[in-house]
Length: 234
Image (cartoon, rainbow, N blue to C red):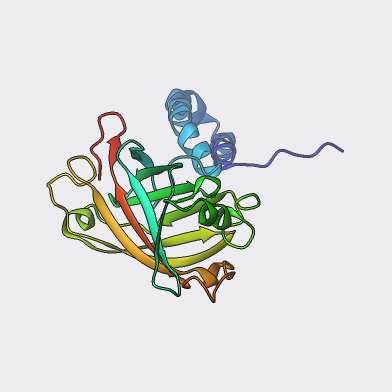
């Protein structure tokens, strides 16, 4: 036996009209044009309501990319200290990133760093160790990333705390970076956005050479942005 099609509000409305007219034959000729016109006008709205069509209440727009990290003027570095007081300065020369505008006007920044290209300035051996299995293990975990929590554009001008999710070796943790007050009216375009923060490398499974190299890694980011299209950077 073939399955019956479900009855939506539009079909039910037509059925009610026909039932009423069937009981009042004398009204058919007088009311038929008006009834048919009303039915044609109401059917699209009733059908859309039955299928859940239309924009849902409380719906939100998708994030829109408004800027990208400018690789020519951005610097992403970090420092480590050895037990002998030596300061090792490292950097990530290969990275990508973007800034999105959310529906409520706040922003979100995303950074992706290539661990295979990390460099310890002036120390080829430390560079090799840092890329190796005992540290970032770049052959297995080529990408490090940071995705910020939503923030107000005013944060880049006045400074403050920017929190977000940092991922190293596929371990994700919430970290906080301090944004320094801007030196210009258009941070990211007219001047660097400067962010600093420290993390414990052992929290991410980077626990080799603890006797020789400090657990704390201090990151310093000097970011420049390129607006996308006619959008202003955050």
